[in-house]
Image 1 (cartoon, helix red, strand yellow):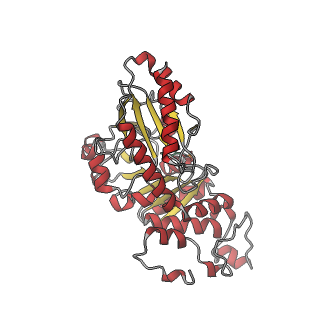
Image 2 (cartoon, rainbow, N blue to C red):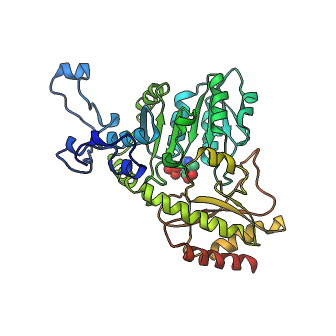
Image 3 (tube, rainbow, N blue to C red):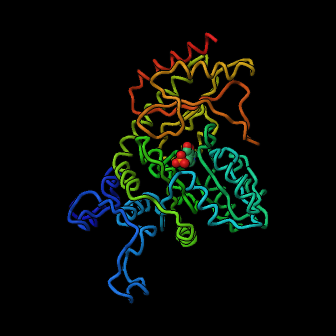
Length: 396
Ligand SMILES: Cc1ncc(COP(=O)(O)O)c(C=O)c1O
């Protein structure tokens, strides 16, 4: 694109992904931004140094590479500002530290990404923050849990592993009536399928490790805030010395260019496999928000523009004592699906789900939960692999 300013406001999502975040003519016409490795930035004289009269001051405070990524993420999220952090987990812990103080009460969805719970139950409790978990399907009923000292409501939709949907506009409205900040882990949907700030959320959290990276080779997170919450987020990140590395920022920006095309494929393949699983006698339930049979489907249809490639299913097993053996037999028999954590990459993965930390949405009783990340392989090959897994589970 010759002129970045000419990107039409109504441009389609793939057009925007191809052009947001870097103005080629800000750097000699090169299509991609330079990777600026920096600690020291020089000032021409003491006055410029004292008055901070230039765009860049020090490596931790941003470089042309990190700015290019932040600008792209702001364009996708509709946010006032974005910080980059070293992991998706830090994209949760840093805003929590920005908005919570000793004596505050925080409401955390029970289906939250498990390491977030670990952070809340250890670091935040030690700092004197009161933590309470709530039912993901509580909706406007969240208001009954809000106390005088409630300062933050954290949401994640769909929930990790069990995929519960949340009524984000209803929760945000109730939380705002009481002056609480609403944060959302939007990693599953990406801003292409859900824009949290348009639905009342104040702070949108992403593990850019997942779909923005797309290749299972980067660990990074981003936090994007609306205008009211941006100054405190920015100040906290700067005070803590939290920043994104230029190499990782470059790779994430590179990943964004193809994210729309990849997500289309992930979405189609995951839905095809979810529908196929739903028709099997050895599957008790498929936990995928785009399936009409899923309890949160109507919310998903109302608020989301698509579904990514991660979902779970409950293997039908009659005796609880055999849940683990059957799940392990299925997973160990897979060869295309790798056994490993994370998701959003080009390759398919499967994991046994451990829900022992849940206090409200506890583990199903109709069988073990298995989470799938559907990669970019061909659906027929993935089904064949899963068939081998089901055969192995049946033999145990
Ligand atoms: C929903 C969700 N949020 C955050 C994270 C954390 O991301 P990272 O692995 O980059 O710390 C994960 C990781 O699996 C996740 O699934």
